[in-house]
Amino acid sequence: MESFRKVTGVAAPMLRINIDTDQIIPALFLGGTDAKGYGANLFHGQRFMADGTPNPDFILNQPPYDQAQVLLADRNFGCGSSRERAPKALREFGFRAIVAPSYGGIFFNNCFRNGMIPVELPIEQVREIADAVQSTGGKGRVTVDLESQEVISPSGRCYHFQAPETLRQMLLQGMDEIAMTLSRLSEINAYRATDKTRRPWAY
Image (tube, rainbow, N blue to C red):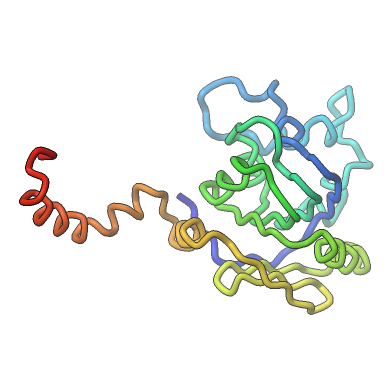
């Protein structure tokens, strides 16, 4: 599992509510068993015209936002179906952090397992960060720091967020649940040794 601690980069404002996982990666591109290649079709319905050429009006086709590592979104981002390929597509495109007021629950959890931090901030604060980004023509950088749990806007203002501690530690250490469990194997074995006398039927 990919780890994450801190990113400083271009932030792309996409402040629309209810951006669902089918918009993020349409079902058309979910065939096959390969776990890679989804970034090329991220937001396909918005990024491309009917003839397959890039849509010049879509923000991720416009410099410097085409190099964005932070996505600024509105409420209920990643709602809809539970497809894990949605965070995979965002990560493959280059995103390391999303900042939004709320998320689809499964999407939120899947972000941590795919090397991204989904930051929750009130919409007023997300808009403040977006305004600061746009005032610089997109050149101002946004920092998302998982260790200190802070977002720093191009204006220098700092916003504090809270991430679920277990998921935060998983992402900081680059460990999934199994790896984190095995990291405590000595404690598990010690418990098993004493537990055999109390619950012999379990063994």
